[in-house]
Image (cartoon, rainbow, N blue to C red; front, side, top):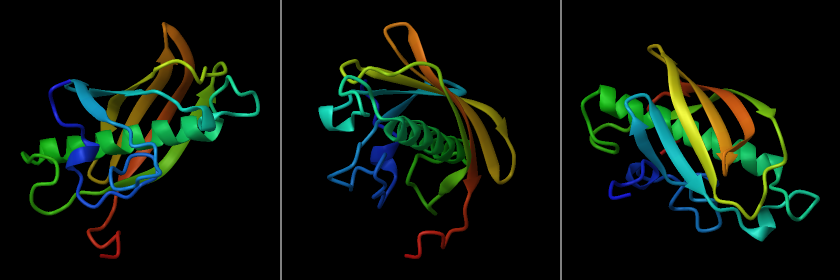
Length: 156
């Protein structure tokens, strides 16, 4: 992909899942796929395993979904405001609700694809649906409520 990932445009992001400033984090990368959806591809590492070493940990799955959806909400808010991500006054969202249905064990040796779709937008909330899969199989589906937070939310 030639475009810059959402996460690489969000200033000062130290999040474990999506922050490029977190050297020990997952450092996911999300991109627009269509007007109302974004895509993220992630290759797990062996230390992301669950009890069985061939299976991805459920908490890592939750983090991937959470961060991909929240960053999609942030990117969409900038876009609706007519700005590039990171331009001008910062826009931040946080997780208000995360509901995941785990469908099958996700393999640790496959590149995973996450697809987030914006389902509903209001003044303070963006509701998204997300799927996580690989090689034509679905491993998890989720619904995320991303809530726009106050400018001083980060405590900077």
